[in-house]
Image (cartoon, rainbow, N blue to C red; front, side, top):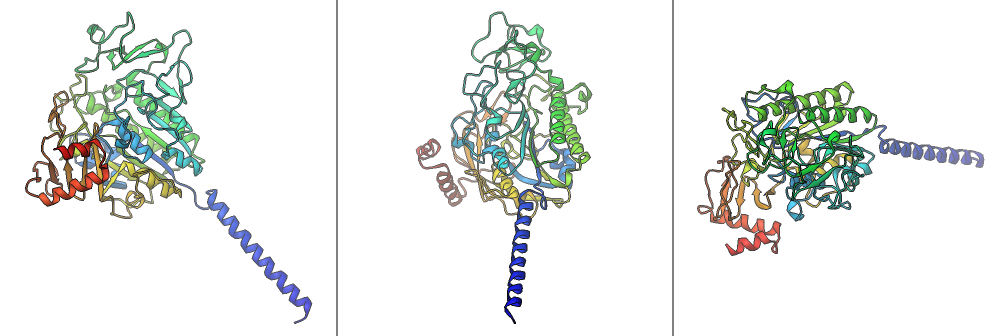
Length: 522
């Protein structure tokens, strides 16, 4: 071969290498930009106080929930899915941060004026997804605090959802039964007039302002306990509020308001990967169904708002379908804690319950360390990607950060969050081996089918809500495989298992924790 041919051959070889390298870089670039492999949209639909037994897919026979049932039938129904706590603020904190709420001493049920619970330096699901190119939004209940502890509701409110990872937020500050009773969009109170400023106080009333306690003639819903302060729309609330009349919400329109905003968010961001945290206010008190749903359940307002919530979920799924997004959207549906009937108002929830069992086969409910406090409906749906089925794998909402991060190709993780994306997608039945359960700062441990509840002083039952709290001066040990309703305490008959559970509980909670110290004193 002469020199000219050798040079020609080398040139061809170099050109081939360059072309191959460029193609590889283009392929990688396309993948990174989502051209070849589009990042999936992620939606978390989060109900408020929806119990394990409130849904047809989990055994309810008296309550029509066709849209939730459809998601369970066509997706993955998880039978051992848990909220991190038996109350709302701690559960929401844990879901977004992937961190046990007992690690944060402020993670308790928050008043409407509480400062932001999530530190702006903490990793969150939306913050992690923004780094991966997602647009992030929250629509609905927040209840994770706002500002730094002294909010001026008449100015832009910060820090809040937008400072912990959400590009868009349309929220109520706390709960429907707490003031301020206004919607807040990206830190601004909607409809607020400059000459009618909002004032909020959780300790004392403003002079001349009527209250539920002193003005029962003004009420359309009577309070039972704890809800006798400022009156808005004929409903007495927790806390005192003055001003902001044009900004106040209409309770009966709240479900529709949040639904329309959630639908609008999807439509506006359908051409980019998005994460939406759609946080329903139902069936938390005050239960105020729109007139379209009044009487539809036969169980009074609590049943009616569950029917309403199910309809909202169905309408939202229809929007995803109409926009051609179902095949590229992972939908996760769950609840922040277990059920409660009378939670502060006379609304016939107890009187009209009939044969319905909000906790299903479980013991306890909201506020309780027993299973019904934290074991909740937990459903994943992704058309064409999740093969319909039922999974008994143990999983917690704490695991959503780690699992979604894996799906989005991120290495970010929460302190306690595990990567269980294969469980969520129905590809594996290997869930958590153990999980710490929480109820109003008290904690317990589940490992395998065993549940250990340490000794706790205090009442065995919350008489206001008629729910067993799980308090007992003695150790409690239950085998859920044989005793799902937790009726048989095996602590005395299984000393070796009890010792094993105590040791693991102490290891996870930390030897220096107050709970472990109290346990040792027992």
